[in-house]
Each structure stands twice: as structure tokens, then as C-alpha cells.
Image (cartoon, rainbow, N blue to C red; front, side, top):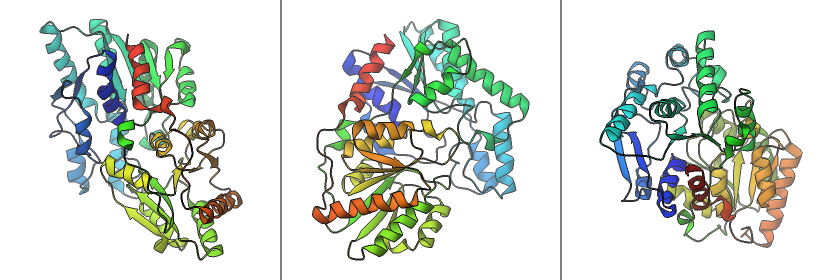
Length: 413
């Protein structure tokens, strides 16, 4: 959501007037809401909110859960029959996804605008949910609009795709939708080089030159607060969701070993956001419960504050298929915080290459225990000299939201 929000915030600066069509918040269902981000929408931008039809209210009633699931029911209790049933239903009756019930309301809203004589130069559809791309497909067919399909994540190659238990007809239809979008969009925006390679290979009809790598970024306005690393602790922070697919066992063991070697160093871990029960148990098993702070979901500006009040930052790439192309949006805010970054994930991945390019840190495989211990030893040695480990030099401005929106503006035209 932040990607689209920041585009809308900065597009008027480049002579482009966006009209936003989104869902009525009173009718939608989301895992989390951050109302504070609404302040980023310029007062001059028209926002049209539509009705929707989603199955998540029924999901909550039948399962007794208060929250809708993350990532298409992934990460739920796999031993639960009700969860397995809902995954099957979602994977076979809602193609591409369970948000598709919104599409007809959007198409009706656009039809009303066109009937009233309004003219548009282009349409941008952002996903997931990838059902949103079918809106762009239909709008191009109806009105011949220049269409930019912004695919923030892979589609049929997303790491949890196999867990949705698609039957062959559902897999065929979903792959067909994916190819139609990639073949017919005028521009396809992706966030990482690896994702571009995945999409380019989907069909010989896809022109690789129309796939543009437009990564996520950071908003300079979010980082006006000065950095305040603690002087009484070596504090390593992770922000965002962290689930059981994030392999942390060796990193936690390395943390515990470093703490054992240096009892005089107040080594601390902090996780801000949704953390799975499995990860919490791993922390306890490693003997780090007293050294670890868990902070529940907070508004975005508070999350940025936690970054700035850290010694170093932890980035973990989930141990899943196609993880070499996972480039989380948070990594750009990590870069903006100017803190050393320890990344646990595959070497040679897009995240690894970004950290090397910017000189912000390095990546270690999740099973590289000895190397992880060495990385912590290096942090401790530097912290003993000066508890402020902030990186020198300015932030990489090429990854600012404004600079990225300027690139988008050129593509819109």
C-alpha cells in the first residue's frame, strides 16, 4: 500500500494529476490498518471509494478468528481442518484471489467517469491482490487506455502458491490470467531483477523491454527525525512481519554465543510487528528471552522511530522458493536509517546485491553459524569503541520515493 500511496503523493509534483479508485474502508477487510498514512494523500487528489464483495467476514465467523489472514491464508494453523478447507476454497473458487469481488465496482466507477466526459491518459493497477490486474486488462480493452501493470510480487511463482492446493483447472486459469496481463500491458513494473526474469520467461509474446524495474523506496519526509542510537545497549532491530519460514535458529544461536562470550556487553534484539509463535519459541529456546523485546504492530512513523533508535538492523529473507528475488520494501527504509544491516538470506540475491551496491551491510546464509558469530563479534568490537555505528555519507537518494515517482511519471507519458 505504501508504494501506491507514495506515488500518489509525489505524482502531482511532475505534472500528473492522479485519480485514485479504492475500496470503502468500512466494507473492506485487512489484516492490519494504519490510519496515520492517510495524511500523505494530497488534499488535491480525488479519491473515489467503492463497495466491494469479499468472503473474509464469512471466514472470520466460521473460524472464530478476529483477523483476516495474511498472504491468502498462508501462515495459518496447518493442522486445522477449517484452515485447510478455506485454503482449498480460496485456491479453487477465487481466481486469482479472494479480492476479485471488488473488480466490478471499480469498472462501474470508471464507466461513470467516462460517461461524464472525463478523459484519462493512463491507468495504473497495483497488485497483489493480482485480481486488480484484471481491472487494467478490461479497461484497456474497453477504452484503449495506456496501461501500466505494477506487480509488486510474483504471481504464480509466489512462495506460498503451492499451499493453496489448486486443482489443474484453477492452475491453468490463473496462469492464463497472468500471461494475458504480462502480454497485453503497455508497461509492466516489477520491484527486482529476479522478478523481471521470472515474468519474462512466462511467454514468448512478452517484450522484455516493456518490463521496468522500479524498486520500492523510502520517503525522505519520514526520516526528518535525527538518529539516536542507544548508548546503553547494542540493539539490533527487525521491523515487519516475521513468520516460521524465516530461518533464524542459527542467527539466534550466534547471538546467544556472542552474549556468552561478552557478558559485559548489553546485546539486545527487538522485533517490531507481527512475529509468529514459532519464532518466539526459538528466541526462548536460544536463551534470549530476557534480551529480546517484542513490539506489536505500530503506525508507520513509530516504526521508523524504532529504526532510528537502533544500533544495527536485521533483515531476514524467508527460506522459500524463488527467494533470490525477494526485495522487501523495508530494506529501503533500513538504508534511509543509515544503520549497518545484517541480512540473513541467499548469497547473490537481489537483497544481497543491493546491500553490496550501497555499502550498507552484507548477507550471510541462514545456516552459516560461524560467519554469523563472526558478524556479531565485529559489531561488538566496533560498539566497544563507539556505540554509534551509523554509516557515514548521505542516504542513497536514487531510492527516494520522489526520485522513483519521477521515473514513473516518465513511463506514464
